[in-house]
Image (cartoon, rainbow, N blue to C red; front, side, top):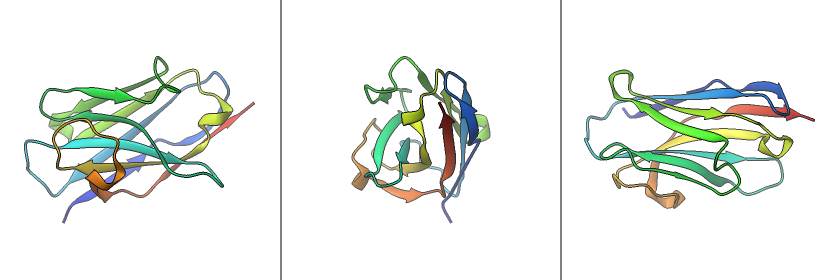
Length: 124
């Protein structure tokens, strides 16, 4: 079974950092992408960042560009999201998901398996 496990959330003050991890298992395809999404209370889910397994291409939404960095550790089947200079508006439940597209995409319908969320709370 395909499984994804997100971890690393927590409470941090504005300006602080957190590193989220998404550990996945149950598939051996060479071409896939891992995406991070977030959903704040009362808001729609939004794609934050993604990385493709093939060429390592990455994508970030404008609001996190320059503050967040996505990376992959193939040996550990883990994708990490380093979040720096956190802002209160980054507060949300963060989810990771896998797409078989093999290229960067933030189209949620491209993602077929989702992990449980991890809460990130940034205080002002």
